[in-house]
Amino acid sequence: MSLSLPAPGPKAPEFGADALIVCESLVRIYQTGPIEVQALQGLDLLVHRGEMVAIVGASGSGKSTLLSILAGIDAPTAGRARVDTWDLLAMTRRDRVAYRRHTVGFVRQQTASNLVPYLTARQMVDLPMTAARVPAAKRRARSLELLEALGVGDHADRRPAQLSGGQQQRVAIAVALANQPEVLLADEPTGELDTTTSAEVFSALREVNRDLGVTVVVVTHDPTVSGQVERTVAIRDGRTSSEVLRRTHGDDLIAEEYAVMDRAGRVQIPRDYRQALALTRRVRLALEADHVTIRPDA
Ligand SMILES: Nc1ncnc2c1ncn2[C@@H]1O[C@H](COP(=O)(O)OP(=O)(O)OP(=O)(O)O)[C@@H](O)[C@H]1O
Image 1 (cartoon, helix red, strand yellow):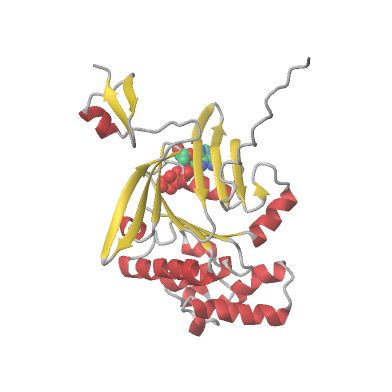
Image 2 (tube, rainbow, N blue to C red):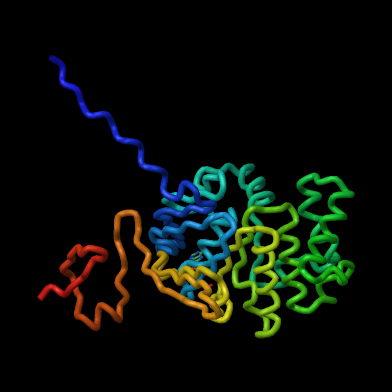
């Protein structure tokens, strides 16, 4: 008689199968001479289509590195990163050009580095479409439509030097959206602006997300900015450490902070919690009906 083995179970679904952006155990090591810097140390992040996410974290925590990888400017050392159908670890040079042209738009902090000094706003929005071989009539219509949507339609024929910092960043957002990307990435887009202008640029980003349905990932130092998005992800030492989700309940805005658990089930306990209960190397874990407790090893 032959032995029958149990049938294999269904294959576990891919981590973040339904997400638009998936980063799993993402690592980026920079090597400068003998010195190695681990800018990302196993970062996990899922962003769903249509979301607006703020990324916060101390200086040097890896925020810009993450954004450069998602923008297709920098390549990860190890791990997994997927945006839409693109595997960011397996892209050829040609793939990268197509990816940067059609899938993502990128806005940098330095207003000047987003724009070309001798071109008008209209010409700058036109440029990425020309590279993508969009017919002239369509380019003209879309340039105006985008500049108007961003509140700078009246300034279409001005050059960067004739625009305020906030107007320049709104033109930069229009340029980034020219080829209808799925994702808009912005690295400290309000970093050089005063509070009022910064609020204007930030509300432009929210409108892009809400009205045009573009998924937005924005790195920011500014707590008043991160306080306005539904989801804020904090990066610490090159890993995602916590998330704050905000929702309105009647007239109240409720913010709840969550720790992030990785695929292996690891959760980081904040330092102040560890210190308060003298949690050190070993802790006691217990499964309760609807929660898990962690106790000092006493
Ligand atoms: N090209 C590079 N070569 C070497 N080290 C780098 C490079 N880019 C970044 N790093 C290092 O990687 C770490 C993460 O840098 P990153 O710029 O991603 O941090 P950040 O959170 O964006 O910081 P900030 O808020 O100051 O912009 C830092 O220690 C930084 O010095």
